[in-house]
Length: 97
Image (cartoon, rainbow, N blue to C red):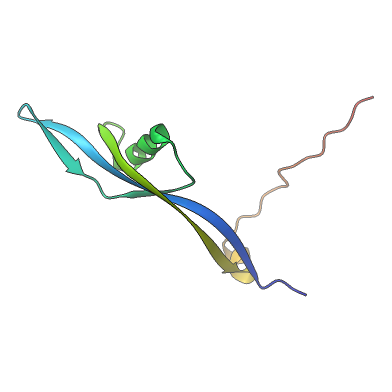
């Protein structure tokens, strides 16, 4: 039987963050649009992900993270059109005697 689709379960995390700025000597909190990443980042990884989107010079604070698991599906024909072919990543090591 020929397989028609490929499925994959992915965990994505939506990171809610704010930027902390000082304007005329007073702290100002700027709500940032949420950033979504694949996986479950720790706080430092979440800060890094937000800074990659909004700029490394921003002083950001993580307000919360929400992770969710979902199954994604794609037809094999679409997968072959979109995927990049790579060399086999696992090479067998020769056992030396």
